[in-house]
Length: 521
Image (cartoon, rainbow, N blue to C red; front, side, top):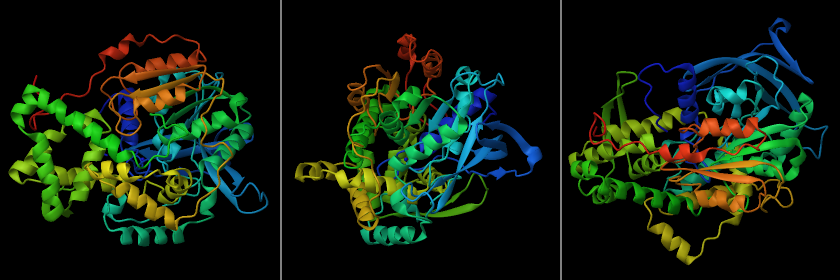
């Protein structure tokens, strides 16, 4: 399912990996029901020379390969595994899944391994979680991490589509263009689009586990990945030791209609925060009114801009529209670091008619996600598991019309799914999960799409569940503050450790910038 914290100085290996993993999820949940892909350009080279064999685990042979995430390349172990595209026709078309192994640091891998499940839908686990063992070094010391690219993503028959900027931001107002783009995307699909859903993906994961000879493993999922993990819990509870669900999507929730409402609530909270912060309100008086006027102005008069690209030194041109501003706002609400720099960017635009900072941010969003989101796979999931269950009555539509996003996301999804075939789902897919497995649920207090209430709804059906809320934080909170340590304690103790949650009280959102130099001291 965007811009990242600054990396002006080379960070330490562990800190850099943490930031890279945060970067890779910062764009999550921006497109459609869930989101854009991660901030990465993935390049993979897999060796076939027998001398390059690094390990054999069960039936799988792992060779050295190189994957890049957020411009940080890493040599890891990769294996390929063939599965039926259609499990009802096992002798038909076969798919080759990419499986990445991040080997335990103590070289024995004696601990129960961990399976990481990426978000999106449309992200590749091998790319989104490339540095997950650096984020959780205590967990990785004694156990292998496995990253299986879900069918239709990454190295597992990826289903990409070419889209223009506004279609990528999912705020395109021309529904005819959305329909044409969807038809083109469907025509490019390499395979049967009805077979790239969560229910089928669970069968793939079980095939991988069996091939590895792993009796049980821990699950770690973020955003859409929590939906996958919950269905795995439902179908195969005996093979799961524990599960960590970060930014939880309830199985009963059809994401789409409430996206704009949740995002508006988060935007209002941000504007109120600036209003009550003396330094911010003094620097940017009437920020809310200024933003409202800016949205209206861009609706009628998009700006034609030419600005210097700091990466290339050249000049870039952009037709900056209301759609681009909506995309920047929506993105910024996911992480407090990006949100902290928004006030001066908005002020420059509405008070000084200077759109350079906003344009650079919007350009970065599009460029960094181009080619990374598997839009075809995304559509197969959303048009099967979300859009058919939208409940849009008169009051809901009226409420959507009052948000800064309006009803564009819902309308775009409905048009897309009129063209896209619904796929396969298991019986009971949308019912609450009741597995008797230790589950740690994590939420950001200020998450604009998967609020803490979602995790609470899931927790109500998990007898061995525990929910932690990160104060002032947005989407994907595992890297924040002391949470890596708490997650490590949970996994290493097989869910029996009582977490010392007092450390969460020290978490705070990033302070708001008042100018290019940063916040007040």
